[in-house]
Length: 170
View 1 (cartoon, rainbow, N blue to C red):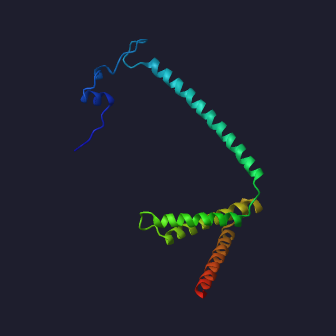
View 2: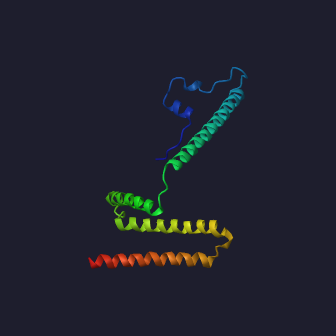
View 3: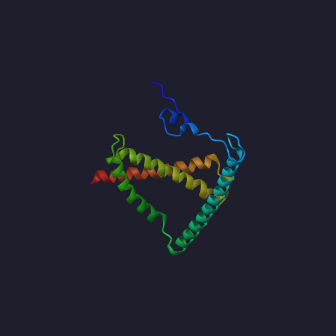
C-alpha cells in the first residue's frame, strides 16, 4: 500500500473538518489570496527573535566562563595521576553497566579494548600538543612522532607483561 503525504488542506478535506474549504483566505489589506504583507511582518519578527536568542546565548557563555574561572581559582590543582585514578574508579562502574546491558557483544573485554584505544588516542593528542607548545609545531617530524609513539607503546606493553606475571605469581 503506497502512502502519500497530504498537505494540511488535503488532510482536512479528506477528514471533513469544518471550515476546511475556507483555509486559504484573501488578505484584508492587499486583497490577494497569498498575502505578501503578512509574510514580511512574520519574517521581520523572526529576525528579531533570532537576534534576541544570540544575545542570550552570548550572555550564558560569559556567565559560564566566569563560573569556570571562579572554580579554577578555588580548587587546588590535582596531579594527572590523581585525576586518572578517579577516572578509572568511574570506568569500573561504567564497565559493569556496559557488560550488564542487553547487547551480547558488550563485554568487559570489548569495553576495555575501547578504553585502551581511547587512552592511546588521548596520549597521542597530548604528545602532539605538548610537543607543539614546547618546541613549535613545525619541528615535529614523522620520524620523531612515530618514535615517541613506539616508545609509549613499548612502555604500555611492558607494564601489561609485568601485570600478567604478577597476577600469575599469586
